[in-house]
Image 1: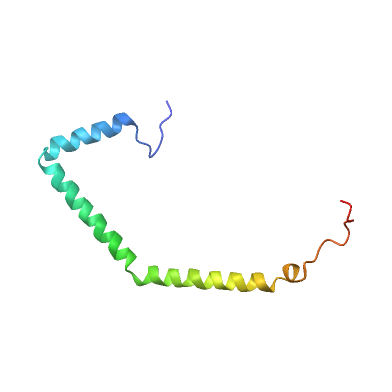
Image 2 (image 1 turned 30 degrees about the vertical axis):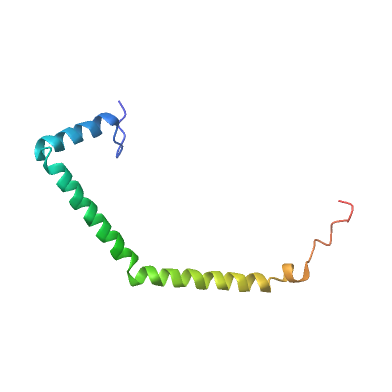
Length: 90
């Protein structure tokens, strides 16, 4: 029998949910979910506000500007150079 590493099937997920319900009880699960949601929200807002994210956006915009400049300087586009070995009938 081949086992898949890291893959959860439907049965495993159901067993995990049942185990959590038995351990924490039905009243505690919504509180845990709210706490987890708040933590995820705070983490997301902290990463969006970080200096690294702003720096990455700045670098991406500068790279786009450089790319446009390089395309302007491309001699094939500037002079519309075609393959001299081709005949016009092709």
